Image 1 (cartoon, one colour):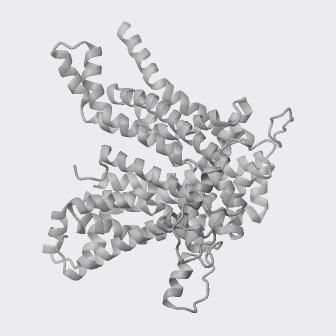
Image 2: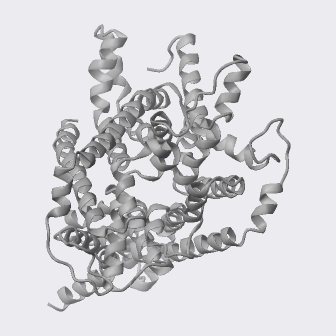
Image 3: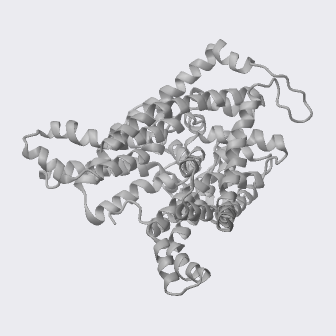
Length: 287
Length: 263
């Protein structure tokens, strides 16, 4: 009995601070936001708020918000697909064609920019993409009378910036699952007469699917919620669900509408996780 | 799959080189431009510290920089402290809701920061915590905790528990066992987690942005405002500095933690 009490005390001492902190800063705020999304005005500064559904109704009535949601989803899709196409081969090369110190060094080089400041990295693309910037100049070295590409403040610029930001994620997750593939399995497939293409499609890709899927989750979800990258690289073309939510909190000060839109975004995120979890679990248990 | 044709080898190397080029090109260009005299990226390139000198006279950016470093340091101490405690509990004890406790670590890193940040703004304002550096500290620690718990937890899995038992059977008191055995075993993990927490906070923009009242900011918040207001070349200089600091931190972290390596 005394031991049980001591154990409870120790657990409370060890776990209490961390989980208390998370409750105060993540769980309660999410609950508060959910509550705010059903109010006419934010109940701060003595204002009286009435319950309402109008912010959610606005989402379904006005085509504007749905268009924005599709734009954000499309952005997430484009960025994720490009990350797979560019990142998977790089991970494959790292895991199976490079070895020893080189592999360790290259791997570190791939992950390193990922841990540097996202805002600064996004900003750095403006020096490359702007009119008469680095890219235009580099092209003009080859073709002296080439027109400026005019990439900055366009949809492709947002995609480039986001792919740059999230590519290391995809390389990382694919690399981890590719590295786990036993080379003898590949030898076996080869000796049984599999062509390189068959080997790739029937052995390598299926076995690395958990890595790809993990990367997809880690990229798609934050891209849907991005607002700083579309702002900086997209300019006026960069209006997304994320930037409209940002506006509600920093420019328009319509917190309840912002809360409702945030919750719709959270709902989308949860649906994505719900769809991905069984897939991931089946894949993981299948190995 | 090793030992393909010479052609294949060069294709692979070329591809990896292109990937690295894509990842580093904008960072390198920006850093070079920070040392270029012309404010409009005019070439030829003229090496000059003019933007770093301008930076030294920019009180707003300096204040923001001091805020960033102070915040990151406070975040490092708090997050590493309480995160390490939680990691010890998760490693040592058989807890009934352990799976739930582990799942609870996910929201801060999987839910888009935009949602987390705006909900913190609402809640902190509502219950009277308000905005400011203290509110940012609350938010940064929440984002750092999952990483700290995972990094320290990974180190603990290495078996400090068994070593402590061994020390106990050899006659060490629990305190001795903790200070002389467990702590030295844990130390590299704790130091790595601390560096990580520092970097998470130092680089954090979204949460700080929503929790920054007018007149109080961190470097990323100040930079974002400057970019939106219109471009000033000093931003190149401060950005180059930030990139060097956070990449340097991560190199140290990588040496301590050796992620990705085969051993």
